[in-house]
Image (cartoon, rainbow, N blue to C red; front, side, top):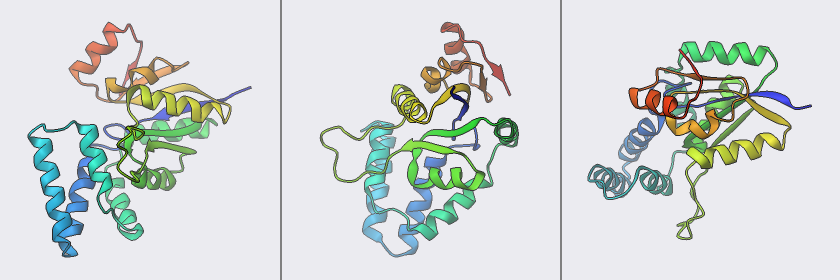
Length: 209
């Protein structure tokens, strides 16, 4: 018999706001403060390229992750900063289901390099996030943990542990593939008009907080 599981998104759900955007500026500030001017300039050029729509958000993320990252001390400082933005309503639901014995999975498109620290800090059983970038991945093997990729990762990860997807909490229609797999309920966190429209079009039943 499978263990019941709850899957919770990170950005805009467990955490208020966009964690990767904050990571980028934290990384740039770190490069500048440590006099790594070449690294800072590279990040600035990446940001300009993204603003000019020279590449997608996913490509931007991959390129940023290819840059020299934060050391472990800096990562913990960044995770502590992020933890100040935990959504209290979602945290209460997380605690409720955890106490009921549900397997808790933090599933996010955010980088694993810091998402794992959020998961550890709050006691999630697992974290499924976007992998770090090693090499140039010219063969396309690096993928962002989003939409169908996220569903495939979470389903495979949980299946190996005999865990089912019973509850999904998220704020965005990017998680529709996951939402459709929820056996008990889907809980939307302050969904946008576009997200609500997508849910209605897909005839998805959901609750809102």
